[in-house]
Image (cartoon, helix red, strand yellow):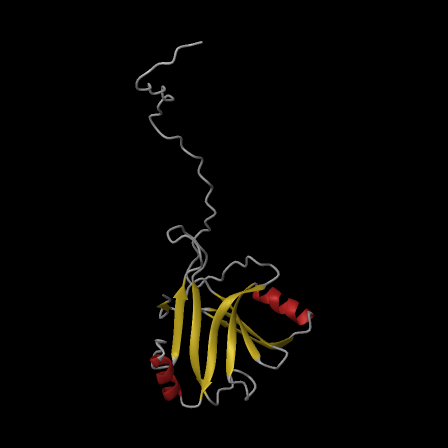
Length: 186
């Protein structure tokens, strides 16, 4: 039997100290090259899909009174009754890119506006999409009422459909650049 030592235990020898920590292999960047201002986004969805809420539009009998109501709620509408919030897609704050910046619009329209289509429609939803043409073709093939008009603007492309109740819905494929007057969301 071996005798046990009495007294403080000796520290075991440490593994050989490394002068530098081992470098981990770096992950390859999946960053896309920067797009030029006003460029159309490359669709990540060849079949087309809704990717978010683009905006809400409301008819107002008296735009000043309705605008004052929303301002009292804390919605920072401009005098024109229009607000756009800018936001960034979810993801780490300092790792670029997280995706194209987002924009959500809230806007008041005149009571007699025909932009919503049917005169009885008081509000319209705008949905952000990727792959607008593919989405519209797929919806038409599925029997959804697709309106024939299209609109191209510096901030995106638009198409309209009708839901089963006849409400006009705006589909918006935005460009990569948000409106310059957008208010950051908190």
